[in-house]
Image (tube, rainbow, N blue to C red; front, top):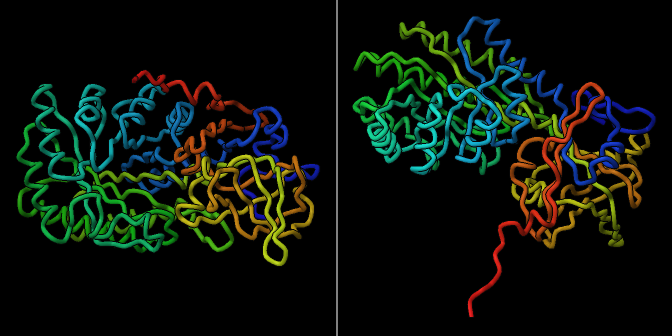
Length: 435
C-alpha cells in the first residue's frame, strides 16, 4: 500500500494528519473529503524554495480550479502563493478569503464583461488574455474606468504533452490562446501594444495536465523565449514575465511516475536562463501554476460501504454512498485510483471488487477490479488522491447533496465546507405558477 503525506496505519486503521479516518467519518459523515494540509504546505514550499535557491524572481500561483474554497485560498496565502482564478465565482471567493488582489491572475477563454469589470474594480494583478475579442474588451473597459490592466498573452506553442487527449492544451488545435506558429501571436502582440488601457507583461502557456517529464515544459519555454527575443529585436519590447503554466503530474497508481516539484522548476529555470543568455535578454520573472500537484494526493475521499452484488464468474460489486456526483473523473477520463478499507488497513488485500457509486448511471463506477480487504456493510473505504477535481467538479446529479470537506493537521481537524442539506438543494427552486 502506498501512503501519502502524513497518512499512517495505527491499530489497523488509516490515519491522516494524526487523526483516525473512522473518527472523521463518524464525526462528519460520509462521503467526506479529507485534506492533509501538511502535505499541501510541503508541496508549496518545494516550488517556492526552489526558485529562491536558484535566484530567480517568481510567482507560484495556485491553480484554484483544482479545488477552491475560502479556507484553501487562505492556506495558499499562508504559503506565499499567488492565485489563478478562471471565473467570477473563483475571483469572488479569493477576495472574500483575503487573497491580496495584486496576487490574483484571471484566466479563461470567454470572460464576461461583468467578470472583467470585477477584475478591474478589485485591481487584480493580471489578466491572461486568450483571444482578440478580449483584447478589445479589456481596453474598452479600461478606458471607461480610466484604468489600466496588466496582461499576459496566452499562446499555444505547438507542444503536445503526453497525457489524456481531453487534458492537453498546448497543441495548435485548442480552444485556448493564440497560435505561436501561424502569426496569431504576433498579431495579438501588436494589438495589445497599441491599446492604451493594456500593459503587456509577457507570455503564458499551458501544455497539458498530469505530465511526468520535463521535456515538454523545456521545449515550450524555449519557444516562448525565442518569440520574446524576436519581439525585442523588432520593437524593443522588454518582457517582464514568462508564465509556463502547470500540469505537473502526481501519483494516482503504481503506473504513475511523477517527478519531485523541485525538478520541474529547476529544469524550467535552466532552459530560461540558457535562452536568455543566447538572446541577450534579462531573465524574466517566471510564473507557474500548480494545482493538482499541490492538492491532488493531499486529498482522500471517505465512503461508507453499503450493498454488495455478485455476478457469478464475472464480478463482485461493492457500493458506496457517493460516486460520480463527488468524483466524475473515472467516468469522464477513465481515471484510475487506489484505495484501502480504512478500518481494516493492516489486513491482506486479497479480495477483488468493483466499487460502484449510488447514482442512477451504469457508468457510475469509482474503481474497477480493485484489490481490497474483505468488505462488509458499514466499512469505511478510503480512496486516495482525490484532492484535485473531485469537489470542484462535484454535482447534485440525482439531487445528491455535495459532501463535506475537512482539513487535518497535527492531530487536529476542521470542517471547511459543510455538507449540503436537502434544504440547500431546493433553496433556488421556485414554485410553478403558470395556469
